[in-house]
Image (tube, rainbow, N blue to C red):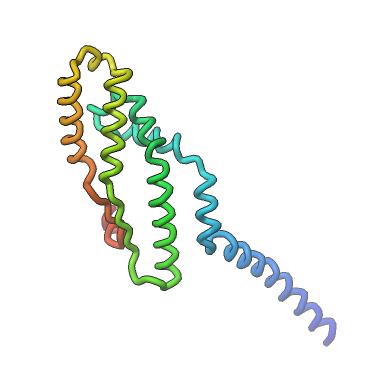
Length: 169
């Protein structure tokens, strides 16, 4: 009987120790918002985002190669703030501290950084097709790009349950 009890305890320990280790691992990693934020801060997302921006930029923006690269670099603090806000909002939702997932991201700053980078490239090192423009013509191009940008980027991005809904895709 003692041997049977001892075998049963050993079997239970063999099951519980790894399961407990997994629980401790989850508790100190993906269930810990500070750990997730620290892992995000370690990740270098600049190059993948630059590639994605080049891939999805409208054709009329494609000639501004350096501007597209600089946009992501200039937006890095903005991106960091809003990703951390999203992580915090998600954890508040998961832990029942809020009833909804809702993140409002103002896109005005994003638009102004895009235009600033295109304007800088037009002034300092314009693509060949824009090289001989006068300052008035460059200003007109910037105004046109600003108006065109409004067609691609809303003033605010709202991420909520509806936005994340599987039916949306």
